[in-house]
Length: 364
Image (tube, rainbow, N blue to C red; front, side, top):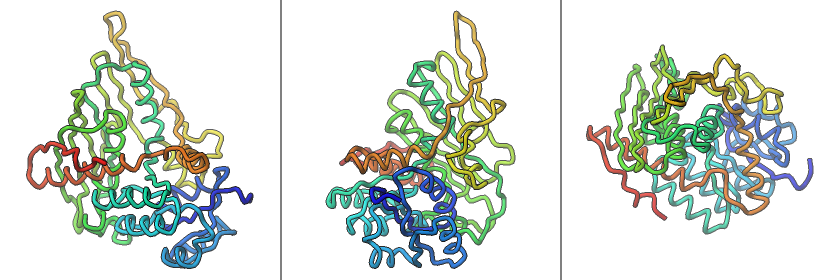
């Protein structure tokens, strides 16, 4: 590969590293994975197969202390509790950093990371890949083009049916102090998407529950956000949905949009495919959403094919941001806001009432 490539250390090769990052990094022009960390011998072998020219090391500390001259950018895909300390160490070592969501386990850590990045003049961003989901891009286009006007209600769901925990997966067995629970996991995406669409919420209400035997953190979450525009967003994430609701449902004064099913990119990545595939990010027309619009006093309903989803756009934008000293694809201030909303949501759940969102928590 060319010496002009952005050299990347993939800090972790678990589910997130192997499935959600590695296939995209491998096929994006201008990026080269040169270092991979994993303490698991089986995963080390997998990593070496995927990236035969990369250095495979047993820990983040080894990568930072002994291999820091071999990479320019650290992609932090370790368990959630390590996101902040590892990102900080990488920034202090003079590296740009991508942190997988959630950004950190509290807003104080988020602010410290942003300040550390500024101090060391390094790019810092968060992997909110769901901004490039096909259905979310479709929603954004409907609003940008004023197809749907004066939105009043927004519903968003990540619902699954896994009624027994898998004790082999760290996400299933750690508490919220270590970044466990659906609110940190899928909730980070739901909240981020709502804020991208409608801005900063004014109030937050939340209900959290532990439904499955042995679970230590929330596996059933509902968050209600109110925005200054009057939009009310209802966000759902749970692991006990045998009959999932619509992924998106948006109601406006002149119509609405409803979409079932998930963006196809996750299943494609799990199947070993990459964004180089011809039909990447395109789903079957049979899965299209439904758009209802009032025209000439009558409601017209039509099928709406989704935009093409493309998680690779995050890394393309990141590559170009580093090369041209332009803004990161996801502003870390946005990610800090998401974590602050999660903190408010947990407090709301504990108190059993709606709270005002204190914007001072996330102010610069």
